[in-house]
Image (cartoon, rainbow, N blue to C red; front, side):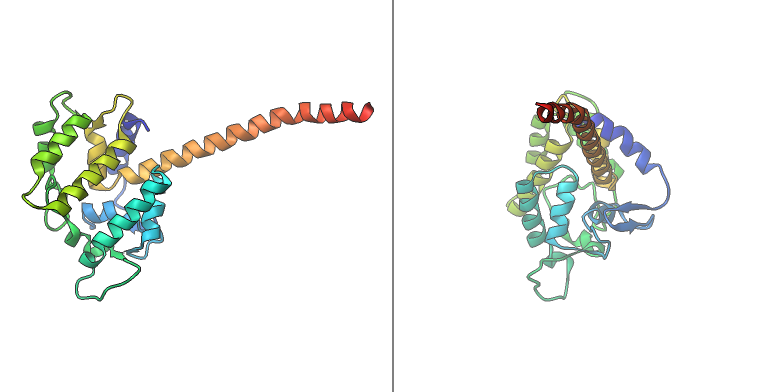
Length: 233
C-alpha cells in the first residue's frame, strides 16, 4: 500500500467532524487518542475486544491470515488481564477499550501519556532524533535504531511489543520507497489510519471484483458462439 495516499487521507480524516466510526464503535470527541486507536478492533462496538475481533481488524487493514492470527493471540493474551483490573481470568481473553491506557508498555516513544492522550512533543521527537535520511519519514534502519534507543533495561516484554508494532506498521504502510511517513505514523497514534487502510483495501477489492465480472462478460459471447457452432455441426 502506498503510504503517500494513506497520509493525505489521514489528514482529511483527522480534520473532519467531532465523531467517527472506528470498527463498529462510534468514537466520540472526548475519547482519548489511545482509545480511538484501540477501538478500531472493537468490530461490534460493545466496548470489548475478543481475539476473533482482533483477527478481523488485522485482516481489514491488509495483514495476512498467519500474521493476523499471531497478532490476535499475542495482543489479547498479553493485554486482557491488564485492561480488566479486579476481574478474574477469562479464557476468552477480552480487552476492555475504556481501560486500554492500563496496557501501555514501556520501551516505546512515550507519544501516549499515562492516560492515553497523544503527546505532540514526543511524537515530534521521533523524527527529530531518528529521521536522518528524510526529514518527514523513517527508513527501516532508522526504525531499528529508534527501537534500540527506546529500550528500557530488562523490559523484555516492552521490547517485543514495540518491535512487533513497528514491524507490522512498516510492512503494511511503507510507501513505494520503503519509507514510513510522518503523517502515516501520526495516523496510528491518533486513531485515524486503520479506518483509512480498511477503506482502501475494500475499494481495491471492489475494483478487482468489478474488473473480473467485466472480463467474464467479455468471454461469455465467444463462449456462446462456440456452443452454437458445435450444435450446428
